[in-house]
Length: 208
Figure 1 (cartoon, rainbow, N blue to C red):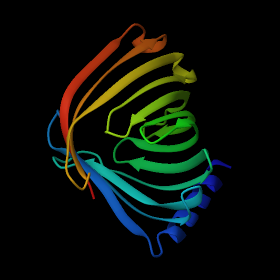
Figure 2: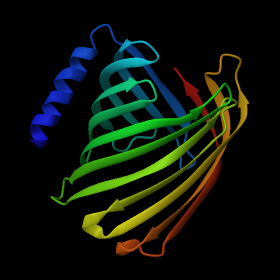
Figure 3: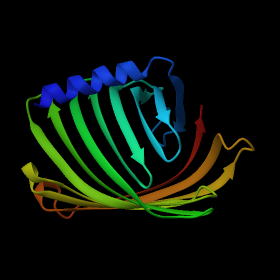
Figure 4: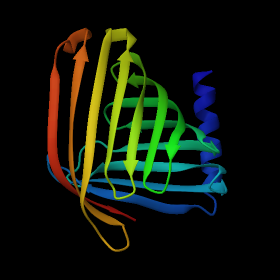
């Protein structure tokens, strides 16, 4: 069943690439280089009801593992969902499913809820699931915040992540932005029980 689902995603995503649009982003990485994300896909429908799919790839300009995959997504009014399958060099593959719902939106504020599940098969043979959900807030001026809770049953590990973003500058065409970002995550149970990770930084990103 798992392999059949992946096959369906790949076939439909490939069909969506016909007459597709190319896009992506380049974002500075505080650990070095820049993270590049590129996507080739096509969307059918309008802003209220649509369906689409395509292929994507991501990596860092300094080298390292590259992730490649295919995706399908659909939206109807305030609800949406997506399926994706990706493979990362020297790591493994992941099959992900996500559902999202818009809770509130006006000309300045947007609040969304999401739930997700993924199945990861590592190259070393270890397999695990990740389940969770969260809330995402975005402001028209480019500010945002999110809180996410996730669990890996095989490791009895629970994680809570809180992140935020404040836009410092944006180009006239809104394609390039300078943002202050930060976040904190806390692990409960499992091999990383009690571990807290914090990060803060300033990053430049460009959408194309």
